[in-house]
Length: 297
Image 1 (cartoon, rainbow, N blue to C red):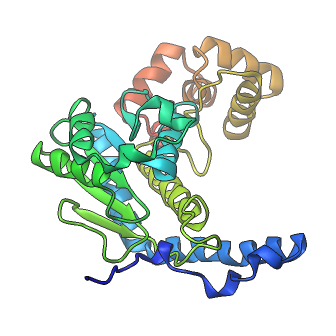
Image 2: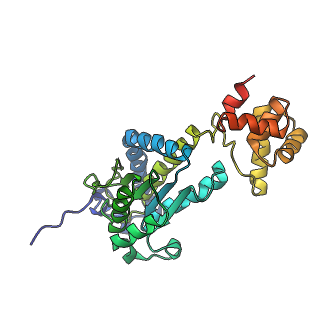
Image 3: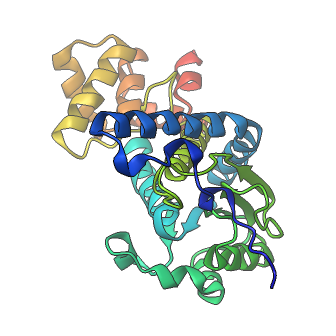
């Protein structure tokens, strides 16, 4: 009988073998100590993450889609990342997308068998992905059939592809970029919602934030394309306008309204003493890059 080769996240962690008899404080310390490995794993994956940032930015600027696809925890994290890009960077929901095995219901109730269907992964991705889109597969194990099926179909359709996994021996046959996150064994054997999930979320944060910065959605380290869709975000928008343009509170509020609730437009209007139409024209000329729009005389 062939001996089973366990992937890293499925091996037993010797440092937490007494988890069941530890005190609450000891449990907190043990898990926290393991969590540091998530950040270290992301650091080690830096070069591959940088490649993904560059490709994601180019994909976005060309008007193509960025699609995250995964199962279980990985899939949920991809859906979350895509959803948060809309209010944070003012992106359209159709351009950055998250897909999870089992569909929307799997976001709230586990549908574990869905990850074993490679064919469904292919069908799901082909409903949305087209030539030159960027598909990023998310799977801690690196061997999830649903994700691998999606990458195979995506690559065949002319998409750029990447695989993010916590297994060095992941199946990378259909991945242009391999983002290996060496998180090691989990504090709770096999529970990839822990370190593997944390590392995946951190890597996704880096990819989307980096790509949006390179696509003109960020000024310095400010989210100037934020959509003020609630009171908290309205207050943030006003702070941004004041911080960059030097406008007082009352003027900032007036600018936000006159700009059509667009932070970058409001800033250009005030700094360049121009109308909304003129500000929008200037930003369009510079492809949305606020620094360049402000630099132009």
